[in-house]
Amino acid sequence: MQNKLSFNQSSVCLEIIGLPDYSINENKDQISIISQWKLTIINKPLIEGKIEHLNPIMNAFYIYSNLLIKNEIPIYESKLIDIKADNLHIHNVVLKSSKPNVKPLTLKIGNSSLSDIINCFDQLNESSKVRIKKTMVSNYLTKKGRFGLKNKVKFMNFIMPPFIAICSLIVFSSTFIYFYNPIEDKDKNELINTK
Amino acid sequence: MILETIDLNGIQSLYALSNRLNLNNVLPNKVTIWKLRNNNPLRKSYVINNIKLNEFDALIRITVEMSKYLYPYIKEILNSKEDIKDNSVIWNDFNKRFIELIKERFNVDSMRVKKLLNQVENDEIIIKSLLILSFCISNQGYDRLKNFLFDF
Image (cartoon, rainbow over all chains, first blue to last red; front, side):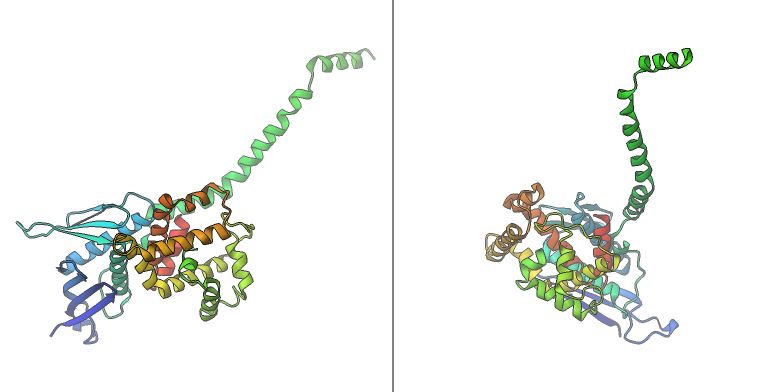
């Protein structure tokens, strides 16, 4: 008998079906060997698949939502799933079947459904009853972003103060050029020598 | 500001949540929260206070908790904008109150505030802000919002 766990968020329900891993003495209500999953969105066709499809689909939604809120072009394309923004409110999801001669499934979801889907995936990630190999993008932050942040802080702290100091020194000392008269200076020197 | 537009009693809720989250040592009273909010350069009463890390953390925790509590409303507003022809009342009410609050509290001479007041341009800003809040209602929401703000 397989275990079934549901994660609900308003208009979306994610169902995980599988078995516990008895070889590592897991509880009977645990799921470590996922055999099937189903994603139900109200008024949309059912999305289901095997474990190897779950992680790429979760990652696709996480990466897409990240692009969406970071003012980058919200397009995600892969062998399994494409997500593109139709406009500010509607997102086009194309799910490509791994089986031959099966047409891709196209869904149009709104912002509210998108946030429900993300929250269902979050519930799954946080659940202690389901163990999945997590290859997800950690907290939406790309390596580039993390690197950029560190660099920004270091640049401001270490480069800017000496740069400003040198610039102000140049500006300050250049004003003395206007007060310096080489002919007058030469005359003064001559006077000193004659004395 | 988005959270305050939804919750009419926003400042009171923020303070109540800070108590519930045991953040009294960081945010002991409403004045402290008010001072922190005044770090926003768009506000009329803008004052430069260096926000400490624990204050920044506390504000994120409160925002995440408030988003959890207001999630059904956030979703309704997003939904209303999706089918604006059939269900425009919620979006229009929200937008109207948002603009009223901006006029009341922000420096309307600033170009960035003028952009917020422009009904054509502010749609995108409001929707993105609502999406950010709706994505951070899980237990991971704190890290997610923090990372987003650092990356901003």
